[in-house]
Amino acid sequence: MVILTTSDDQYIEPLRVKVVFNDRKDTITYYTFDSFVYPNTINIMYVDVSLGIGQTGTFKIEIEDSAKAIDYHALLAMKIYIYAGKTQQSYTPLIVGVIRSVEQSRDDTGLQTYILSGYGLAIVFNETVVNWRKSAFRQSLDSLNPSLQDISHEANNLVRHLVTSRDVFPLQNSESIIERYNLSADGIDIRVKDFLSTVNEQNVESSHTMNLLSNAVGGMWGVDRFGRVFYKYAQFEYSPIVVKDTVESTDLADRTSYFAGPWKRLISIKKEDGFSNRLFAKTSSQTIETFIELNSQGSTPLLDKAAAQMWVPSASKFTNMGFLLRKVGDPKSTPRNIVQGRIVHDNGGYPTGAEVISFTIPIEDIKRTPTPIYQFDINFAGVDVTVGQKYWVILFRRGSNNKNYVEWLHNNDFSTNTEAINRVSAISDPNGDYSSWPGLRWNLHTSGPVYAFATFDSLSHLVYAEDPVSVDRYGPIENFIDVRGLDDNRTIDKYLHTYLQFSARPIIFYTINRVTIPDSLFMPGQLITIVDNLGGMERSKNISAEIQEVRYEFNVAEDGLGTRFCEIRPLGYYDHLFDLEGVCS
Image (cartoon, rainbow, N blue to C red; front, side, top):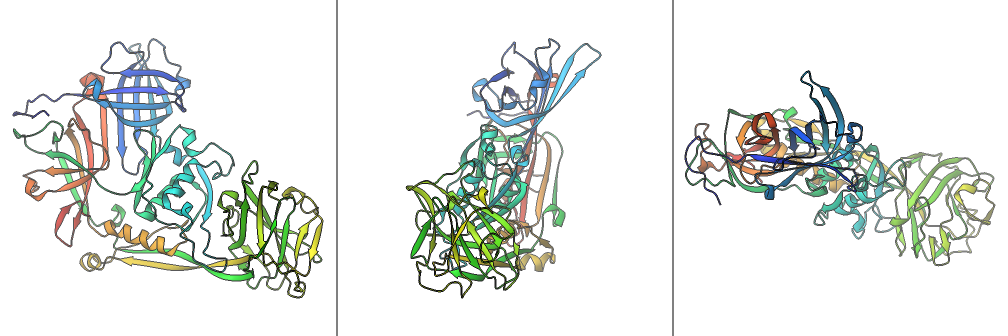
């Protein structure tokens, strides 16, 4: 471990850069540049990398190509790996990204250069639209409470499904999010087990969905510098690095940085800077509208037939339905693994009237034991019906053989006059394919059974949270939080209180444009200590701040494509309860 010695003229080893150009699936490496190596296959003159918490990260690269060695059209969409280190052996990734623009420049000197600009690979979430709706199964068909046994609705499993599934997009069977740039899902922390009962993200960028799932648990997400999608609880990454204003004989090279220019500190309770101490959000809760049947003593395999159930609504609108279903074996379907359904008007006592709406149920959400299913495709956002009028709900054929099929459970009662109570059921004869409707023939069952089915609606209401000490000291500063996509009261309540934990404290912004680079590089998320005796930030006060942004600039004209300085943007909080400045838990 090196001890930095005395004077202002001390030598600081420059940070060097390496750049690797791959195709987006990492099957081909086109170019590699290493500033420790001469000559290189390409000549890089300038590299700029900006990183930040909650940001995709950006980069800019200038390449001199008077030898015309580069096909600049092919540069678009190339995957970029940028490394930095003070020795060739200590290279560590700064960013993994993708090129999004190429600018060609012909200078009067006879040089030809290309300037490449792009983003870190979290940009794939901004460039991907999802249609994703998931509801945990209920404790029973007549319960509004989700079953905590549905581990697919633990937050980490929801994120894993989002990034690995091909069935969460408007165009089905597209490349999954991680397949698009050969990403890994290894950064999804299995310890994030918060239960989120309902997620409803309709035609939104997947970055919106990830923000929602992170805020709901007090977490953070992104794509790290190793190409891993991460999702974890927000926590400080404690670092031994100290940024200080004076050189001391005991300073260590791997953990000491010095101010190399002016800096500023701003404390704010502006709402636009993120401060708020009273929060509101709108959420919804379900109400039971109609039960057709709750019992499940019998079942009908949807192996070579469709089943239909008549009902008469008691409310003019419903926003969800429930079925008791069970799968046997592995009843996969193509191109989508779904059970298809329709709601139709009655036509002379048969399920052949005009369609009200169609819907789908993912087979992966149907269990091998009778399960209350409240899981539909994104088109099912609410249905207006006429009270007292007859309707039918149909589930179509789903099964490949007598070992692999889906069952719809019923009450196993074949002796009740269901025509008298408008609960007639029907079985198609034969076929039962979704595409065959409305030409299917139906056999009516006027003495049962009745299939397990229910309808639900939702009511909106306001949720509220505040920090009373902060409100008393600074006055109320209110904010309405967008929680669309979450329909669980407990989740939203936790969301607001987690948000309030930091938003109700005055925020401290540091602008530090030039500091020396320690051997242990600055990275976003690190918690560093700041010491400036003239600024009233003595070491004894132990003032800490979290690095929100860091920028590295390598320029061959200044330092042989190396750099001894970088720019950082730390952030801290003022804890009004204890009159302490720093990052408080």
